[in-house]
Amino acid sequence: MKPKPSSLTTDDINRAIFVDYEGSKDKPPTLLGYMIDDHIIAAIVEPCFYDCTERYKAKHAVQADHTNVLVELIHRAANEGRVIISWSEHDYNLMTAALSEHKNEAALLKSAFRNAIFTARRWFKKSYPNVIRERNDLASMMEITGYRVPEKYGTNLVGAALRLLRKQLALLQSETPADRYLTPCGVRAAGWNWLKRVSTEPGAAQVIRLKVGLGSNR
Image (cartoon, rainbow, N blue to C red; front, side, top):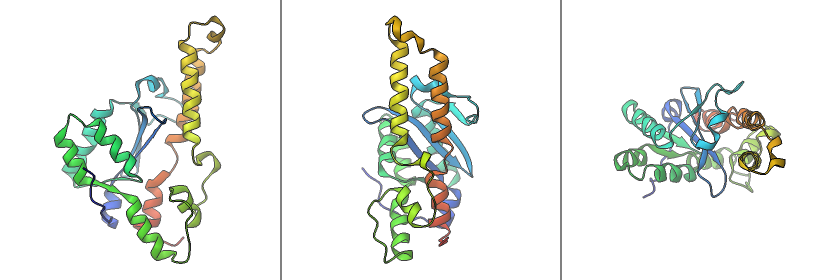
């Protein structure tokens, strides 16, 4: 059952656990990024990408069992009175799927989860009553409200990078001699570059803090 839409208070946002998934369509999630008190962790939850950890400028990336890291985050939220914020219901669905055998944690998540889109829409309509948004994604809202989105953090870039990396991993595992030029080092380098890009971007958390939580028009 889906959580009911709930508005976010400034205190909710200041103390929240922000979560964001990255992955490929029709594949298990690859990366679960989360931020607590401005401390960012990139949990790699798809085993075939574990070798992307501990790279230059990606020391915050760690191998993690998907279910275990969720259970830890949910109990921390419950024990410390925090909410868990995401920019979409999709992230909530991924979390509940991973918690299929953890009914207690699923119930705690349902209580703690907040979809930031509901608060963002309300704030946007009040602050920009004459502006019509063509898209509902975070990037378009950032642009309209004066936050430039760097090209390397644009829409659909992560999916393309993941497809390339999966292809490289598949080639590495191939028994075809001609494919063996792709060394483990090459795969690690590709993973390292991808991880630096997707796991260090500001993302929804900072935008929600600045634009929704604080109500600034700048």
